[in-house]
Every structure is written in structure tokens, then in C-alpha cells.
Length: 97
Image (cartoon, rainbow, N blue to C red; front, side):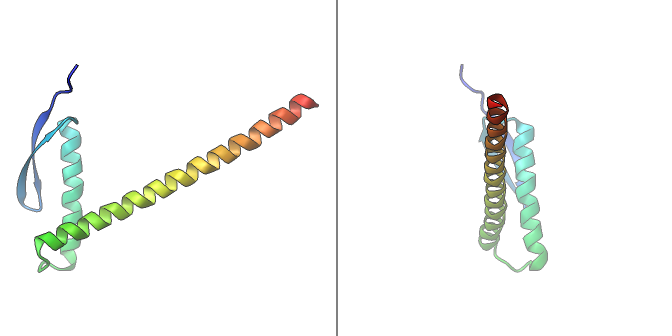
């Protein structure tokens, strides 16, 4: 079964974009709103930044957040694996007793 594509119109930093996406339109709008908010965060510092530079700065901020979240996830997974290993050892020790 083919996944239905949706056409969604969003606004980012005053510009309208028409997007085609397989994701739910509400989700696409949420993503666009997040990107839009990043542009406005950067614009607070200086409205004289050209839009292409603002796009790069917004992309860097979003990539930074993503990389930090990935690192946190990997750390949490490693901690969970270590804890599971400890529990397995305790169970095995208990079964040997």
C-alpha cells in the first residue's frame, strides 16, 4: 500500500513554503514552526543578518540540539545496558546460591 503524500503550506520567517510530505500535516506544521522559532531567536540578536546566513545559523543551532540529544540517548542506553548486566549478574549469583 502506497503512503499518501500531503501538500502542506507553512510559513518560515515570513516566507511561504509549499511542502510535500508523507508525514501528518500537523507534524509538518510543528516542524516548520520550530524552524521558524529558531530563525526568530537568531533575528533577536541582529535583524541585519542576511537570510541565507540566518538559515545556516538556525541549521547549526538545530544540529547542535540534535547531536546533544543523540549523545544523551546513547549515554542513557549505555547506562541501561550496564544496569541490565548488573541485574543479570545478581540473578545468576542468586540462582547459584
